Image (cartoon, rainbow, N blue to C red):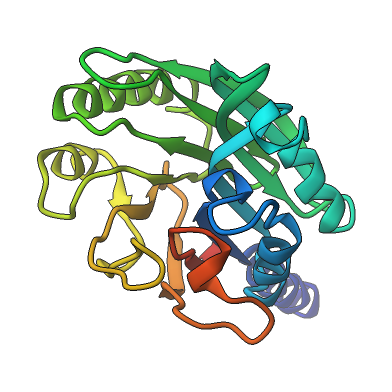
Length: 259
């Protein structure tokens, strides 16, 4: 009986260690993949590969607009990555198609559910949205807040209400990446940090050629799961892609362990 107990304990310890999984998340405002080029899909795919991302939150993505050649940009990126899963959330109709945000992930990550949250415009310039993807081990969301304070605060309130309604008891971490158009010491970021934990560094990410503003972040609601930050950075240079010209934002890269 003692031998069986020791063996069972050893198996449990190994199983517990195996339950902790490391993921690399990237938040990237891609500027409709055409800020400095007619199409930077391949360019940004090279960057994402070098950053060893498992999942990416994208902002400023076109879907079949005449502005960017009637291309489904999320599908084009997923194809460039070799068949990644992808989910697009339109924020508004634009030039024959749509403009919005998206989430993409490695094909081996099992997608359980997708959703789109419409955010209020209020006194802002454009309607905004949130793309939501629930994977087996975590939930990942992408958003891009408007420029005005009233809109930002209202959009965060709608986002938080959705999370409280849908994922409060999900038992897995919910990550949110986005371009918040808000500085770290701003009221919107303070509101976020009442219920979300900021995981990424307060480092300038915009504009990409000479960054002087920190407006891109990745947050988490842990929901009882332990989330440990293994690495977090905003790279200013890569070997295979020029992040200064891929788009006008630098990527935000976060590696976490989820237990």
